[in-house]
Length: 474
Image (cartoon, rainbow, N blue to C red; front, top):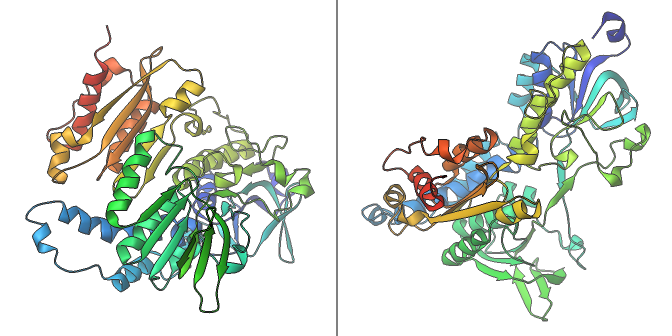
């Protein structure tokens, strides 16, 4: 930014939202020479993922996964004679959140030369953000306010004090009975976590489990949850919710049956957090969402950016951080008058949002997928062929568990001879995913993949089996 332009503003960049996305926007802009950067945060620096989502939820899940993994191996299962220590698991979970203290994260911002402003940030006009009584001006403003849960419009639900994912991941106790509403990622993960910790869990889903994934995913998960003791009820939704004077929740179903539990967890999705951001002050309609270009700049502006969940492109922490890296460097380039590389797969373009989004569900079995499902690929008009393989037939997988069960699938664009989607279900399959992500992003052809030899005996040998199922190109 020129000296004259810099003199017009208090900051070169103000980021509203101090979660991992906001931190990365600020950091990458600063690394590229933007010197006056501020982050505005109304809660904890580090955001949802650090304190109420990714990290604490996985900490709740991991101990149960370790026990089940041991019980699947003869020789190890005989050593597992006790039950899970729920209090110790909750304590370990709290350690991952630093006791919900963000001092370390705030110190990191200071070490990077980034100002931290505590309070609610709201747009007050072009290039302007109000934080409490203070009005800040900036050459660029980035909104990184994340997403908020959606509460279904069910009579009595709101007044029954339901748990959301925040309450579930931060809970200080394990309820004897837990009702989970929602068959998406949060619903299935937390149902499994609390069942492992000792709750009697009933999971209600109005459709299937993880409906956006390949059909076999939901089938494997439903069977695994049932084996864990979770009462999975598909095609079911509540019509009314009440909490009585003793604190017990009653959920009435469409057939008139009433289910009771000490707590109800609602995990029915999230939406971009655009409320009370002052979008109307800059001519934007919050109800219409924030359309952005490939650098995350809000369409119709030359100074405003929306990064991460708030833009609705890919509501995943790692994808938001990916967007943030591109946006932070794009902001720096524009402020400094440097060349911009926003062509597909360029340094300043978040192209993977459209072609190669990796997703992991940390259930047991794990679900790991990237790119397009077969159905989605066909909807987009691609000429594809899909092949599947039984993971339990792979020697490396059988070393992980006696009676290993799982499945793998790739979706191939026949016209280009490249993989456009991959899905794995099974114990410890999350670590298979990055190879598939690289194949999709790099557009590695099937004939070249035959030369990527998987080590034996590893679970990755499934890649060879998938290629054999597909066949060598003529």
